[in-house]
Image (cartoon, rainbow, N blue to C red; front, top):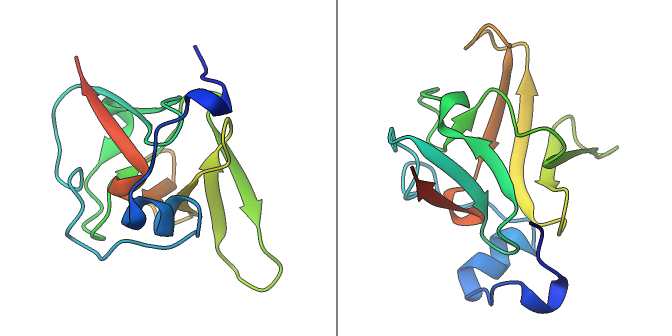
Length: 124
């Protein structure tokens, strides 16, 4: 169930820098980069479900990587001044990271490169 804006979580300064300010956390420092437990990843700001652990894989890029999102959970935004495609939570527009295609890491040939700080993990 999606939360209304009034129910969203308060973000600390670093979370605001990444989620609202569209920043990036440093590579290899995120709390979920190497997580292998079964569960669901939700938006840190609004707690909408974003990714399942079944779609997480190791790309060795320094950030959590997923080759698919929960249907309808993520919006893609192509910026004209950049070749990258930004991904945001479809509920609150919180910045998640970027999506890359054609790298051949998985059969789906897609890599969602997501800031750990943009998510919370709920273990099964």
